[in-house]
Length: 133
Image 1 (cartoon, rainbow, N blue to C red):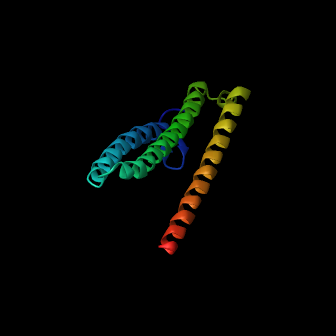
Image 2: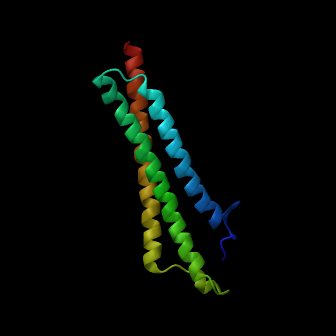
């Protein structure tokens, strides 16, 4: 398996590493723009208290997404390095690697479920606040 072989439809390992780099670069620009736009609206400490957690959550979510991509790239890199031969046995993962992959997948599922619950709570609170106003 080389860097140019498809790991899934339309994506090679090289494409995945490029995506990781581009996501990180774009996110830095997005965060800088967000902070510069919000800066003009912050006039009191209450504004900071309200806006800071939103920016922090955005940054934390971005970091978690990148971590998952990096973990995936690490697993794929091990597969690529083990597959120097043509036999199918060289593609097999060790038990430790399988466990790590399953753990990473479970962590991802848990993160997504937690994020969905958190967003639903925010949505409910926002709707409640709007209806009370």
